[in-house]
Image (tube, rainbow, N blue to C red):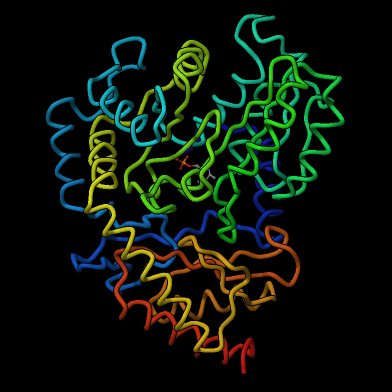
Length: 422
Ligand SMILES: Cc1ncc(COP(=O)(O)O)c(C=O)c1O
């Protein structure tokens, strides 16, 4: 209980919460999952009812993998429940170094750095690329940043955290590399360095950024900027789940970023974020990144689980999981189309957006599916353009055909009921 809160300030907070509720964008009414069943494809248990989860980022089903959970327990036994301190005090445990080596190797890079989350990673990477700790270290007034319109919030906050002038910040049209070219062209005589930043997989409809093409545009202008054009890609949704061996958008397009950000909290089934790149860049970050220097890393158990997941994804077992994921996706697409349902966009990522086209109906469809024991997410205007309101389905290798059949059947029935399809 709050012993004292200024009445006026309390009212201000109440007004803000009410404003959000009235706008219909309440987030704090969350679905509480009591536990999971022990089936091959685990179901959520909510008030003793089973629910199929079709909105999890656990694309390979690794969060319930026995070896991953065992590795988690082992790391906790060996290193304790928490890191005890930040990295440069006494919080650098061997398990973090092993995880960093493994993920650097996985992405074919010199070095890696683990953070508590990908959010914290992006804040560090973007703010440190744009502004150094010491006043003139990075010659901050000589840099411009060019960001995709639909980049993740953590990238935006990272740019904000650098507190550079607004004249140094640019946005290019979503996935429009000609527009990026225009911005790079217009600024080549004004700045000595450009930082280009994009999501790899865009999580709203599963689109992917072609890193090879993007890097080619950066290289076109690399010589026009005295300190070059530096490409940052946050492929949090792509790593582990996308590309022939799970190396994400880079693998899919056969391209490479200068700094690649990822998360262990999605396809790797654990938690925590990371960045991989050249050693000098990682060395610089270890000296400069506030979310690394002044904040704990993930728990050792979480790092142990992540390390085991990276090992699995790197093995033939991982290949099999990726293959199963692909099969499930193809099966979902085929069955949905057969059931007269349409997708909002063509995606070959496990994020599959089912087109509804109406904000209210998307919400109603989500609620109807929930009543039938299926959890999905509705993504509506203004997050997606008007008329592109959708139900975002996320497929996992751990889903069974029966699960998918149940989703398709319920979607067809409910979409008919709402007049979305005939
Ligand atoms: C593109 C992107 N970057 C970063 C994040 C944050 O990941 P984490 O949960 O590891 O902070 C997300 C998660 O929603 C994401 O989609």
